[in-house]
Amino acid sequence: MREFVGDIWSLTETHDIVIPTNIGFKHDYQAVMGAGLAKQCLERYSKTDTRGRNWVALWYGRICAACGPWTPVSIHPLHPLVMFPIKPMNYDDPGLSWRNPSAIGLIERSAYQLATLRLGPVAMPMIECEYGGLTEDVVVTTLERALGDLSHITLVRER
Image (cartoon, rainbow, N blue to C red; front, side):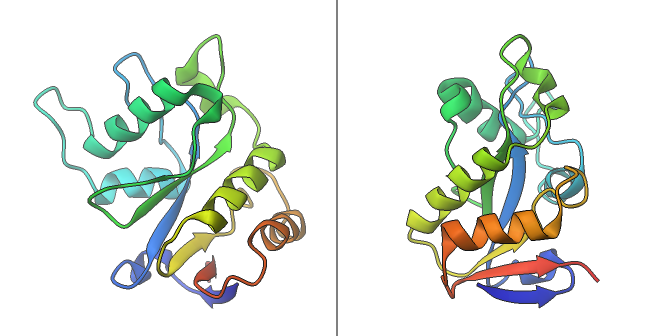
């Protein structure tokens, strides 16, 4: 993995951007993407349907609804976005999955899936170090174990 210090969104012309996500959806099938990079994603890609539902959130929410706890890393068909599950689904109320703690096992599973995808350059944030309560040491060790020395993946640290 390579490292980059700066704004991850400055890399959208040359990289797909990894968006840490919950495995969950609201009653209208929109994924809950209310904090951090996921929220920024919805602000950047804000196109909505006639009911006011964000297209990106609806696309990913439908994947979560169809796949449940096995929701895979998902590549958006139109935007340089790679949805990367990090919080497991709340079975009682999938719309509250954002409340679940980050699961290092799910992060590792998602990283292994990312490693198998045939993607060009990928920019990945320090997953769950800001909002998820994980330490950089744990995250970097997990990502390195799963991703190895894949040179097309850039780990982005904010300034």
